[in-house]
Image 1 (cartoon, rainbow over the protein chains, first blue to last red):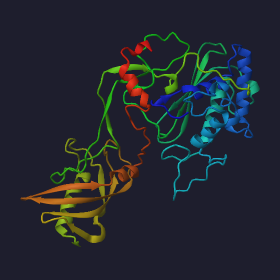
Image 2 (image 1 turned 120 degrees about the vertical axis):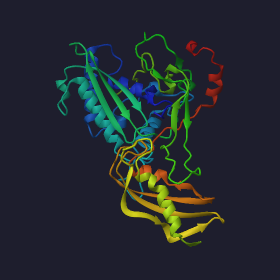
Image 3 (image 1 turned 135 degrees about the vertical axis):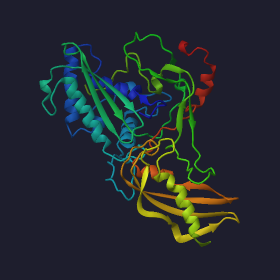
Length: 275
Length: 139
């Protein structure tokens, strides 16, 4: 999860983690139900490192000429170091020192227990999806709602958000949405949402299994206030914090490409051995 | 360098009273800041004579964030504003040019910079590719 050129992302790794959290690719409700319980049990087991719970081992994330993490080990190192703040070699981050504040992983101006937040968020999401009260045995699961994962940034600090919505009385008819709201990570964003790699502009049809659209101005222009101009007394120019943005082009609807963090029809199935 | 002319300090204090007065466009609104009583403190008590008509001092100004400032509601935090002001005499008018540590002020008000820099294209091939797209819906 490198941080894509938009403010909301799904992309390949979250898609696979989503598939894993939903119990894999089986069309059997019973299989999905049992697999989701298995995922919950693994998330709750402190002896299993979060990066070893499952998902990152998917072979569907391997290879690719532009893939920055073509192997399982690459992905574990990326998540541990960039997200959780581990040092190379798997050593967890040091305690926060206010005299020399260091950031967690690649999160700008932030230090916190990201690993703990991610684990608790996924655990709680699975509990909601399965209808299990917090901390109660997964054997009491009454349903297997779909789980959807997103990454939203930037945020001043790291948060895991969970929302849900029940559908009909069917045990499979409901959705749990997880949003990881994170600080910036040094990634970029396009002021023109059409500037990504092969986005679909003005998509007309939603007749796909899943999708992800953004509606905004086609262009944004930044304005920076100069506070050092010479003025008469009392006319102190007041700055904005950073640039002031103005939408300066017509509105547009864009479906970012999968490689740029967009959604993908059919998602990206989990292809590992943890289920 | 010389000792600070009290008149210069007074001029700068008056200039910065913008922070403790109601905004011109919002009559009756509370000012963004209020005085703590510490007033304006010239740092090092030195005045830099830039040339015959311009003087500068480095100053520190302690304030309480008691009203809306730059869209930020009152936090009631005590903040320290620091800067350098150049004052130039132009006839009977005194003109001011200020270099204020705004980033520190916003930080003291609890705002965090954690943005994503906006760029036209991350990938070198994207700009050229996007420029050739006649109808992106065909992708």
